[in-house]
Image (cartoon, rainbow, N blue to C red; front, side):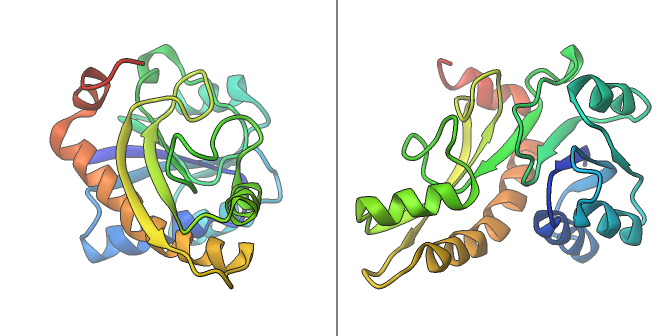
Length: 193
């Protein structure tokens, strides 16, 4: 069972998903703390309602100071919209989900709706999501799991976002369970980064 810190910047939809799956016994994780870089983030209210310690922290140093008070095996980025630098002990233990099939539509500037607009503009027939470990570069760490969704010509960026998020709700918990089973080092050793 992984002890997880969740970092978010917004509404906490991914936190909702994690909480529901933990309650159902389908996610092998225990959320120790939820931290947001946005003081008014709805995700912090949800975390409090779920019974998780919830804090606002404006930058990496503040986040890492808070994390020092918790026993954490892994950090899950859940709609966290800044490049995060963890404490040394958790350097390779930051998991992220990206709303495209990496290496497509990733890197600086590709987040949230920007990704889905780019997918639509390119005329892609598929999109999807990628759960990967984060490092010091956007979307460059080892991939844990990817899942594809079919797109229709008539799909708008909002339609694409809805399809991808539905798959994210399945894939992110599945990836966390894989990490709990195989260990973090397994994923870093299988690729050259």
